Length: 341
Length: 273
Image (cartoon, rainbow over all chains, first blue to last red; front, side, top):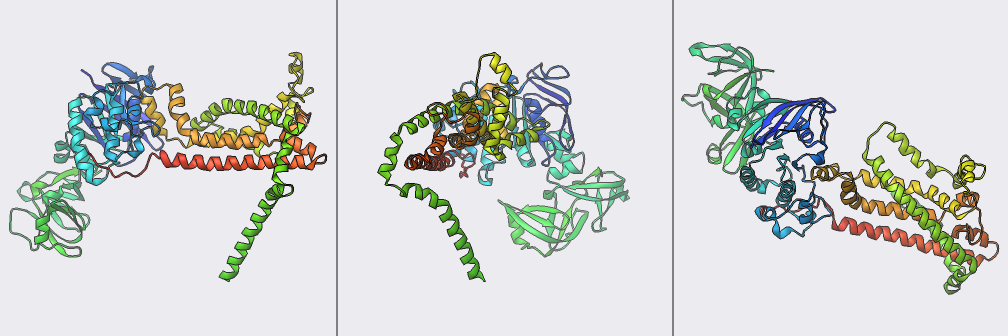
């Protein structure tokens, strides 16, 4: 089977990037803050950065090990660069066929055939992304590398382009490594997500797994969760009581833990009300609203220590506004406890 | 006080402009323009023009041919001592051309460093057209190298990397990507170097002498003519003023064309359909 296998250490200016990863006919996203070493991994696979040790093999062919180091032009990779790196002096068609491959079918499939004679400077962000994809794929590479493919797009077109890219990647069924700083993009495009920080892989798994059982606070924070720090101790009814560092308030979790912990809580598991409700939620925090931001039919309500996501309709009904005090409630079962690092 | 400052700045500007433009205008005003260009038919002028065109063309071709790959290497490779090399390249810029002439004589002259070896091969350089070519190349090459290094340095690394991931070897990366994208900057550097080479005086007169029809270039002809026939000296000077103005206007126009048509990051409204 065609697969990309990496196990390498790549020195960078500030730290060593260390990664071991097998990519089958699937899309694996590397996410993490900028400077985490994600792009370095792509560059090492393409032969543009030199690892200090390790191996890179593709479908059984050795690209890098202690004796072999194929030059970039000898490796069968399709690389979509950040900002796309299209040749500004060449037409779309000449960009796509630069490597000698054939553009037949690809331009139609990516709906850029009518742009064949245009120069990249005249294209929109979405069009440029598709030209970059066509160019990367024209030589029929065995591995596809995508560096922040969504970053150069404006927010209006993002969702549409993302859905299209997802279908396209699914159809290709090539080992694909995708780098992004946006967890949402990664969750929408990838079969598996690896969270990187400081050159290390913190956790890798399907998007649902990262959301459900994040390995640590970094992963949880990246997945969009609230991360509250506190000290855990056993409480009655097999629950755990956590005294929060910020407010000194005690909350309860169904996860067992003891000592310093991070409480992981997703915004959509937090409900808001004017008065503490009499319901199954064990935890009620009274906090001041910092900001209310609408995203489509939802509202992200930032409180002092956590963020809640409610429907825009609920936000209207409760007349939420900055500066007001509100009760945030969540169930003990909605929290995950991870050891504090 | 604000008023006074405005007056001072305006007067300084007026004085600077007058001082810089007056000599150039004077060249054209001293004798009627028709008479001026008739002087270019003078024998000495025609000889000098021929020598200048020939030696400059050869020197410039050599500078482009050797200088372009050199600039590419200096711009794209990081090695220890790179800063020192770049500074060394610029040293001839700050030297008086006469020093360059003495240096060339000391290196390639009959009694120079390589004089013995060249003599043994039957090659004599001093006071021949080859000497003019060497002098012109020596003096203009730092101008070209400096501009060309800057042009190659400004290339987007990702574009060159993209070419490599598309299977391009070093020749193809250089010829199909680096060279066309740096063309604007290389052209500008080339034009400036050419102008500097055509105007070369000090190094040439010391290393090649001023033999009419052999080593006497246009600037040397001005020097030779100005006490014999001042009108001829004026005519050649007028030619240089026009040539210089032409080069500057050409560079401006080329700049507009370049930045008007292929700007890679023109903000485009992005639509997905």
